[in-house]
Length: 116
Image (tube, rainbow, N blue to C red; front, side):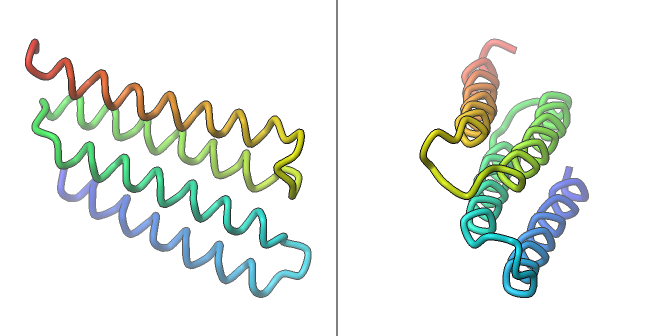
């Protein structure tokens, strides 16, 4: 689990650096989207690190960590191609819903650890 955690943390930090550099270097990449992608990566990383800190069975950690990585990647793609405005932006609402699903899944697994 330590190797997986290290790989995902390094990947998230690399994604933040690449996204921020692309935001500064590419004129067509809106600052709105740069900030949203950075926020999605940080939130996904925070949820993943919380999962790693919890004392649940390893199989649940590995399975849920891959779900968190997949949904964070989907969130990044959603906000990357979303229109640069909050008004009437259903893509951002979908990304928020996916983040809520991640958080609820994490809460359910941590609450169920005493029964498994």
